[in-house]
Amino acid sequence: MPAVITAENLGKRYLITHQAREPYTALRDVLAKKASRLVSRKSNGSDPTHEEFWALRDVSFQVEEGDRVGILGRNGAGKSTLLKILSRITDPTTGRVSITGRVASLLEVGTGFHPELTGRENIFLNGAILGMRRAEIKRKFDDIVAFAEVEKFLDTPVKRYSSGMYVRLAFSVAAYLEPEILIVDEVLAVGDAQFQQKCMGRMQDVGREGRTVIFVSHNMAAIQSLCTKGMLLSHGSVVGFGRVEDQVQAYLGTLQQNPGGQGQEVVKTRSGIEVRQLSIAPNPVVSGEPVRFTLELAASRALRVDAITILFNSPTRSLVGVVDLRRQENYRLDAERPLLIRGEIRSLPLVEGAYVVGLYVKTEVQEETIPRLGGFDVLSRATAGQIAPYPPEVRGIVEFDATFANEN
Image (cartoon, rainbow, N blue to C red; front, side, top):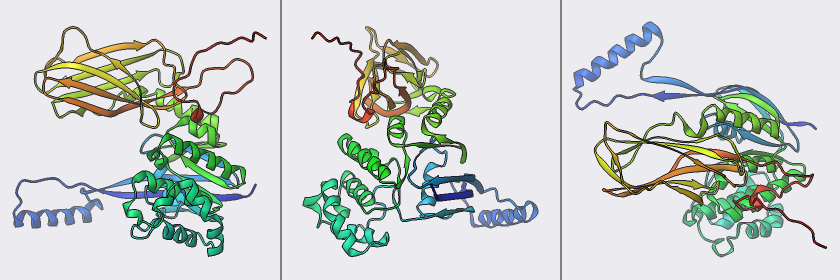
C-alpha cells in the first residue's frame, strides 16, 4: 500500500522560561540584572532564564493507506505534540512531514469549531475547511446529526454546548466528512461510555473502508481492539513501531519499571495530609489474579484519621470498587511518624484496560477525595479453546469466572 504519511527526522523544541519570585525589586536591581544577563549571554551564549525542551527529536516513520495506528507512551512522551504536527496545528522545529489526503483531527474539546456559530453552521464550515463541496456536506448532514444526537441544539451557538455535546458533534463531523486520514486524541474520554462505544465502532468502519486512523489512548484494550499497528514513544523519540500487540506489550513493560505510581510526587491535601505513595503491584496484572497495594501517608501536624478508602475507577472514570482500610481504633498521624499500610486483593476480576486509583480520607478536620493518584493496567486472562472473547468495550467492567455445561 502507498504511504500517506511520511515523517523524516521530526523535532519540536520549546523554550521554557524560568522566573524567580522576589518580594521587592528596585529599579537599579532590574537594570543591574539586565546588564549581567547581557554580559553572560555574550560570554557563553546561554541565558539562565530560558531552557530548551525537545518534545520530539529525530522522529521518522511511514504510515500506509488503510493503517490504523495506535500511538502509545507515558505522559510527556510527545504523543500530543506529534498529533499537532500531523494535524498542521503546529510546525516542526526540524525535519519534515509529507501527508497525502484530507486530514480530519479531534485533539481537544472544540477543536476547529467557531464558538459563535451554530452546530449547523460549524458542520458546513468544517466541511469547507476539508475542501468538500456543499452538496457533499449536505449528503452526509443527516448522518452527522443522528450520530451526534444534537438535533434539538443544532441551531444553538456551540459556545453554549456542554463538553460532551461538543465532543459528540466534533467527532461526528470528523468521522463522517470522509477524510482520508482521521486523527483522534484521548479527548473521547469526555464522552459517556455508550458514546465511546459508538466512536470505536465508527473508527473501525473508517478503517475497513480503507482510510487511515491515528489514535492516541491510554486504554490498551481500546488500542488493541481498533488498531492494526502501534507506535511507542518515549521521551520524544520512537522506540517501537510495528504489530500493535508487540508495542502494547513493550509499553506495559515500561510501566513495570515504575509500577503503580511508585516514585510519584507527594500530594498534599487541604487538611495537611501528605500522600507519599499509593502503588499497585504487579502492574500490569492479569484479570482475576491477586494484586498488592502500598499506601504511605504523613502529615505536617498531628491529625486523627477516622477513615481511609482506596478507590478503583474504570477507564471511563466510574467507580468500580473500593478497599476500606478502617479499623477499630483511629489512625494517628504526625510529622515524625508516617503511616505505612500494605495489603492484598486476593482476586481482581476486571476486564482488560487502564484503570485509575484514587483515595478518600476522613480526618477530624474534614473529608477529602483525591480521584487520581496513579493507575495500572489489567490484561486479559487466557481463555480456553479457540473462541475469542467479545471486545472489552461491550463486556462491562467485571470479568466473571463462570463455568457451564450442556445438558441436552
